[in-house]
Each structure stands twice: as structure tokens, then as C-alpha cells.
Length: 311
Image (cartoon, rainbow, N blue to C red):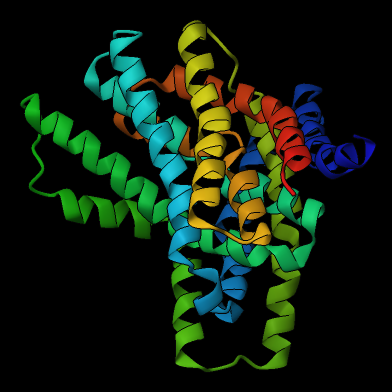
């Protein structure tokens, strides 16, 4: 148990440091916003660009592996959406936004860092495959479902659905970094050593800066009301998602390494994009914000549990 604590707790100590820095007014919210813009707009896209440009595509993009992870994510989405609708009597647009919380786990900041600490940097090939598909798949499913619901309720309709999905995805710097990394990978070209060294320096700053910034951002997401709904969708994210992924990993006969990456990543809290999706549509914002905060705290337990259970 002590060894598991040494894997999980350092990640949350960095998050906690960011939280305390803003809480005690050592840093202003605008400082955290600037740090997060650097991390999400520069350092993390560079990290993903470097990872995808050198990734063994044949090994990383195993359909069975992606099917196990995204089968669990999709189960979290539909369980969250239908539960919000039929258990908590939210309207369909709220229900889709709540379902998105169960779909979009924090695969980058938490999943990447905890998997690396638990199993080493060599275990991250599968994680980068998840991250490469994550935003495109989740936004496509979430936006498509929301626009279908709005069309059926006499909203704006789904005529501009494809352009809307593409705009949401490719206005994201992370997806730009992923896309450029893919292009460099399949081109067979290599960058000069001074360029790669400079990019690697930026990449190494990405996760620590983003974790610290995440702590500062979480101070704003204070739980208010809707607690039963918040706990339900958090359970869809950090309980149902990894459980389904674990079952599918066994069914599909995944290797131990692939199973570890898929299940540990599935056990992560909802990502901040869950709130951004809710805010984009003006739906269930309080539930999304509180779920990100509470889920991030509970990830200490969910990550430790699965690291103990997995071979």
C-alpha cells in the first residue's frame, strides 16, 4: 500500500500546491489562467506532437485496446445520460451534458502521469493512443447527440453538424499537436536534433505546469446542490468506466501492459473538458464543475484500487 501511495500521491500534491497557492492568494486566478494557457496551448501540444511523431502506430493503435477503453467510456456516457433523464428527471439537453461527464476522463494530466509513475515511461505507448483518439471521439459523440436532441426539440437543427464538430475539435491546440505528430510520423521525416531538444524541453514542462494549474482552477469549482446527480455521474466516470474496460480487456485478450494503461486511464476523474462542454451549451454547468472537483479528489482511491487489482 505504501508503494501505491508513492505512485499516486505526488501527482495530487502538485495539484494541491496549485489549489493552496490560489486559496492563500499566493497566486492570482489570472496567473493560473496564464499558466494553463501555456500548458494547454504550448507545452502539452508539443508533448503530444513529440509522442505521436515517434509512436509505433501499428503497436499503439490496437483496435481491441481502443475498443476496451472506449467501450467503457461509451457505457459511462449512456449510463450518465439515461440516469440523468430517468432517475433525476433532467431534460434531454441537461442529460447529454451530464452524460459527457461520464464519457470524458482526464486521460492526459492524470492518466498519463499516474500510469508513468506506476509502470514507467515505456508503458505510455498505449496511453498516447488513447489521448490521440480521445477528444475527437468524445466531442463527436457528445456534440452529435446534443445536436440531434436539439433538432428533435425544434432547436437549431443538425444542418451544420459536421462543420461544428470539426471546428470544436481543430480549434483545440492539443488536437493540432496530435495531428501534426501523426503527419510527421507517416511522412518518415525527422527533425534536426537542436529542434527536438528544444521541443523536449517544452514538453517536459507540460504536465507539472498543467497539474499545478489544475489545482488552481479547481478552487473555482465548488460543489453546490445537485449532490445526488453529481455523485451518480462521478460513479459513472470512475467506477463504471474502468469496470467495463476491465471486463472488455479480459474479453478481448489484451496484454497485461495494454490492460493496465486502459483500466488505469479509465479510472481517472472527469476532465476539465466535461465542464467546457457543459459551458458551451449552457447546460448542467454546476453538475459538471462539481463533478470535476469531487472526481479529482476521489481519483486517489480509484487509481490506488486498480493499481492493486491489476496484474
